[in-house]
Length: 96
Image (tube, rainbow, N blue to C red; front, side):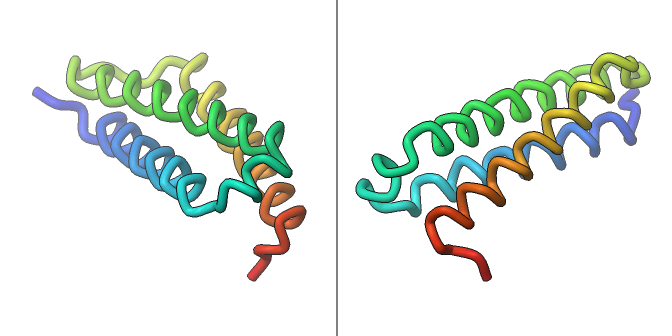
């Protein structure tokens, strides 16, 4: 049996992480080189969020609740990725 809440949480964060990684591919080479550190931080944050999302999916498939360390890790990672994304978009002049 699949535990639906952890599974859906994991799938949602996997989708969000993939969307973030696709956003980086839309930047020009000049933009990526100008803000190299922020682009790297955003990319690594999305990859880490992807790993945590896959862990949540795995727990959901095992019919288990999400452990506290995973919930905390997801919360901290999402906050960090959003802050880096806002700063990156601001520095590149892409604020909507």
